[in-house]
Length: 439
Image (cartoon, rainbow, N blue to C red; front, side, top):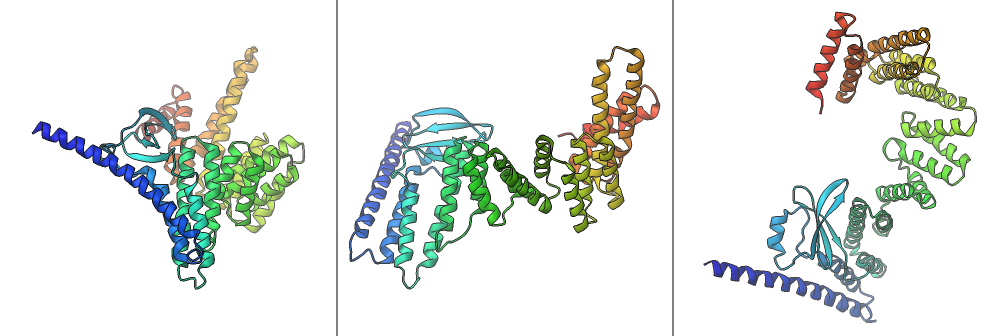
């Protein structure tokens, strides 16, 4: 029986390997036949001819992957791919996580820590860019389809090409192949806009721009971020404005950079990326930083009850080193919304930061009298931080803010735990909360 099972396994392996070779050969013959028909004057005016060319190239795109189906456990794939054996097995880092990389003659398979296939990377495609060939054929099919009877099929085919380019692009990004990733995302966006699909793929445009920006190819990044703004696509919290502003600065166009950031600030006054970009510009350029407060004032006129504007104002003063004005702005948040946790939290963090800086300064002071005065002032800052932190802890519905406040309060109360019993009680309360809720 054992010999029979071994013989059956070997037979199955040979059959699977033979099937893979036949599948590749069949895909190639299908493309050749479709291309031959497209060269025939009697056939190349028919929409069916070009649809066949398109679908043949799509099949050729898929063929090298064979039976390697995404999201399949590796043990199951070993049975499905019995005739295909990896040339080598390596470790690869994907998104910071170690993956099992199986190297085959024409592809690489990446398995996550749970041994699930997550990425199929074709290293030897049947044609240089089969998706491009398929797209060309769909375009030709649309041209000859006078009655537009196949428009729906053509549109669906083009959308599929765009999606495959996007998936391949994001896979290349995960594998740290950034140049290739950007190239594929650009192709995804271009395919998506091809008629009759005619859909602007702002996600691919933004991701391509981001990769070029991160790679310091600012000229290319400019092109795609500008396109995003033209399509009124700003990404999360207006990040396109922040990135494009930085691109202009790096290209030496400061006027355009600050104009972009200010435009973004009007739409997204709570964006930390935009705000930091503006603050850095005014601090480094030597220009009058009062422009920042003019922008805040304009925003307050339009949205007088937008409490985040007061919080942003506090952040600006903090960045500029004007701590007292920052605290006033943070306190003003409570007059607009008594339950706005960030106002209290910002106030508490600033007092704590002031205490830390003074502690560092005191550590270098050799004069005992001056040192004692610094310590007294340092302790007062810590005490000042207790009330706003406790208020933020009380009103917030955000568990991350709550535990952050508890961390600060635990440290502050511990500092005075030997002075009075109320401080020890405070330390115990917040220390227990942190222990119970820490991730």
